[in-house]
Length: 148
Image 1 (cartoon, rainbow, N blue to C red):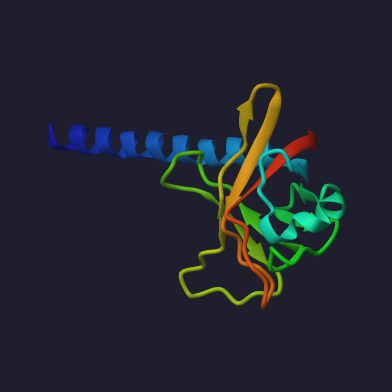
Image 2 (cartoon, one colour):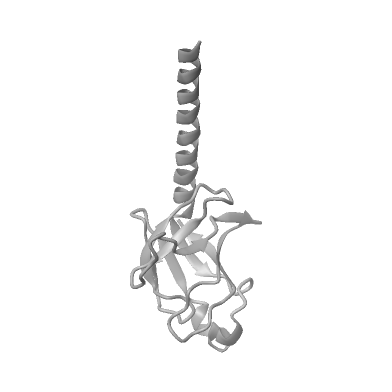
């Protein structure tokens, strides 16, 4: 009886772990693509005067877990780095790790939410990014998927 209970618990743990990994894999695959800054949703604040420039801001999430933006912007620390997909749950978010930024030992990067659908658009958002030195952050930045 004890042996079958132990085997059942091991099997249950295996199923739960594989479901979590599958969630991360699905979130990762959904994230891959090219996104443009959504100026309808993003409040640029002091950066509004340059909105004609920023409307062309793109971020690309690649299959090799890297990201690249087509321009440097003052409200984000860097335009290149790596990204990690969470499992889509509120407890395990996605993270950006800028190439030219030293992270603490806990490894926490810029937290962002996985893509979600609003109407026909696939969006993701970043809360309070780390800006370049001497510049102000933006509270919430929205990006809209334009290509896979």
